[in-house]
Length: 510
Image 1 (cartoon, rainbow, N blue to C red):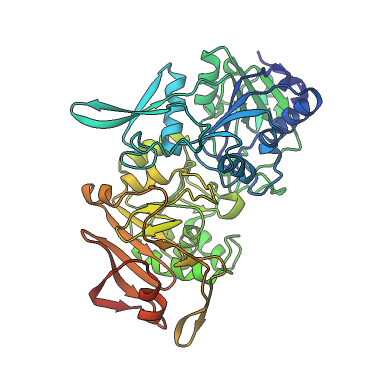
Image 2 (spheres, rainbow, N blue to C red):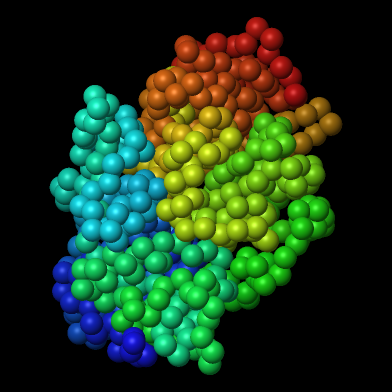
């Protein structure tokens, strides 16, 4: 039976050099109170130090000063291995400035590697990342000169080149859940996701490490067996933290995220039309992108909705009434419902089911999706996309690779430029009132998150939707296929591209 301790007592078990593995997705299921206690212990004693942090997604926060990444800023961490860095901007900056050893691996591969670690595997085999930045021939996952560990290797199986990802060797698990019963069995009834909590606990337990779980409450009665996410036998310490929140930075719980409140698809459509969804609509450029992108949805589609501009696609699907006819998903594990945006990204309003992250990526990697909507930082003339890295910004790859590499139809949703872009809708159509300072279409992408050659080989259909035009991927690279009404073809598009682009003979004005 696990011990019931305070967070301050719990973190005393962590030793110098330990690897701490986190079970969370950005702002969801963040073990904030454990993080605060760890920070305070280090401030008081200078220990533990030389830590490795392993997180299959990214720690919550979204802004500088988050307690979740403070332990990094304090200098206690030697190495971080994340898929996503947008929620840890200070960590990303330290990596770009070569102050911290850092690695960026695909979310799906990391999730499967954790499951592999739970079963004692030294590595997992995957096609995710072939011919992309994570491929050993590029070694782009090693983020600076400090980062010398070989975490990905190539392997030939039956004459086919594949990737071999090392599994983690965690010493301590930080897990946030909702409840523990009096025996120490853990349930997650108020959480928006379950992540890979069980696999993480299994992986740490089999190595003789310490599994620490923070929960809101202790139940008088035991849970039904199928409601237990982590059995007590795999838990070492339970911390009661009644102040914990459902989502980092949001004080109020939303019962629709965890199934305590359920809205039908029709009710969700009405909810959005009334402006209650919380997915903002003030960004006209992203709204224009979503209006065009949502036209690619067909009844029966199983869909992934990405972060950023794609969040607006989910809102448009509800507004247009197509939401009941499709199944929107997020890599965190939800199926159907309405994916949440902003700091709650990863959750969904009234999901019909929530599976583990590894199970969701099993489905994605197997080609289970029909279509996905995802953002982009840079696009070149060949159709390659950088979705995760620049010399000044490290966003992290997240689930980008698993989603775009194995989905038959990919719709990239991005503004034509960034940094001050302002767009207006007038009676004459779309008007660019202030052009962005930074081009999104470039001569060559800085990092290869998506390969046009892979897409050709996999016979994928690729579309690039901006606020002013639409491109399609052809064997010869990008083709300009549509232009928004009000946009000047030469001035607003062709003169701003650093490469020649073919204009479709039947160019559509929409």
